[in-house]
Length: 119
Length: 108
Image 1 (spheres, chains in turn blue, cyan):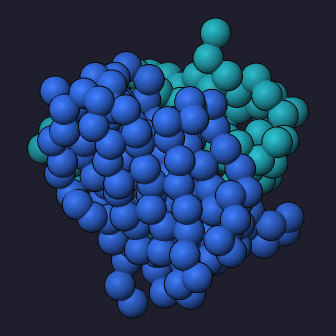
Image 2 (cartoon, one colour):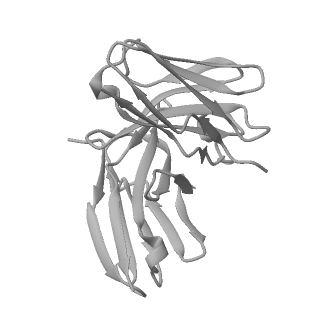
């Protein structure tokens, strides 16, 4: 079974531009979560989608948005890029939303990440 | 103060040593994850815990809900265990909060 795939793997953008990142979950997984990882802040939760609906959101400005399609693939968009948006963006998929159901936890499977550099 | 604290931040070991990485948290949680991140960024989910203890191969994870503390143990460590180990908790509003990670280097 293929793992979580993310495209592109590397991206260089300039300040003010916008960017769209893509994540294809493991077949059959309906939940996709996005994370940002920077050297200074570590890993931070961005948002989670399940059945095409955003179910949970971290503390990021409105410039960060996402969506999920009917085939569970997800895209993340960052508008008006800032230098501080340079990071590794990771997505993870799981069978059930939240990666946890009381008494029956589901693991999250991570993609390789997209490394975004803003200059 | 971070809601999830890990210790140590950096750890070096000789091959074969027993390794312990600690995670303490200050929020109510529904689950705790241990993640492994290799150079290049790839992340593997090692364990998800809500109570007790789990074992997978040479890895053991424990959690004490009353003390708000979890440990990840690696027995008979090997150079391929060299990675960053990250503790993450899912709080009671369903958000994941990450520790800053522990960088482990195992030398032959």
